[in-house]
Image (cartoon, rainbow, N blue to C red):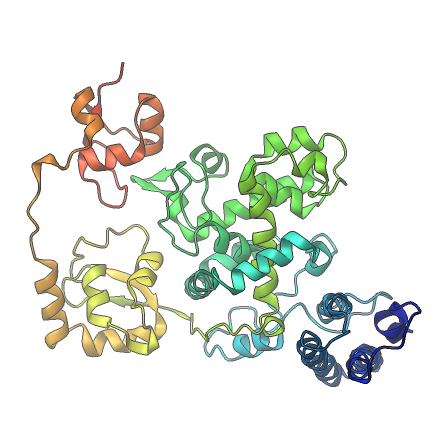
Length: 476
């Protein structure tokens, strides 16, 4: 019986534990039997009752586990083991192949079903995506590194996780279809984005990786992320998601659908991963032959991505509540000249967005410099819930006047603001050619950095255009 396997039968002989511990182990046994009942209900076709029974079992387990920590003689490891197993069962992985439920947590299903007007998007079943015939839970081993990453996301990285979730929900209509078309789980997309950029479309790392999914320049080019009219396509959410999905499918084929190795290759480089793996694509990411040869960044990266994906699917199971986000897309046509910065001031914290709308406006309009005023008649992408707010607050009245006044303020330019390196090495001119990016220019120089070029030319948001004359350092 499953209850025997998961609960009391796991213990050996010895002295009988105290009554308080026996009671807790009884609840553990009750939770395990709840699984059997849920499975029977699923076989009978009553999916709703099955899900309710399984949720009640999980709640019983969590309550008993919390009390175990303060009860002498209680073995918490027994609860942890059953907790992990029931989470897998809750994810639809049954030992006999019967599928009890979807990959989506109740809170996720309710949130998805509550998104009015999003009928064109997958709803409650949006995360029920198989990865080459396997449930995502089978690939997310609940081992030490993943558990440690779960704790990080739920503690000191919790604000980052929440920001990533909000940013993703407003970008979802652009990014998720790319993964859906590639038959990849949405949770994986969220996990990679949360770890890479937190959903900041214009993120640029010190190594030159750029965009919401942090593509290096050469890899981006390989998957179609070049430049269009001076715009680096790595900053385009839909294009970067499409390229990311293509990359993952390519590497999954190479590594025989080993997700952990594929994620590791995305972070640490597929060349290194192929050399380490050789012909044995069934090897575990945590095998010392692989794990010990990787950088600490990659060792941390893989479990962090998987942990974020797992939390995306099962927030309630970890006492986590993601905010409800109305990510239905919309647009406005400007009725008065305004920059994205001015619109952010004008919109304020409306609709409960305490941190303001600047990040969302930038993410949805990645080609625009947020400081440059856009002319009347320009169409901007915004969340649909802001369309009426814009008409009411940002066309007439005091707020657009205030925003314009703040935007027109001038800050004195300090002549000594140039970088020290450019002073000591001297400068020369460079004319931007078609296909150039700051990364490619820096590589031609062999002695500079993206940040140095940005400072020398006072570039905003790393934007350059064909024919533009740049100052570059004279390199020996």
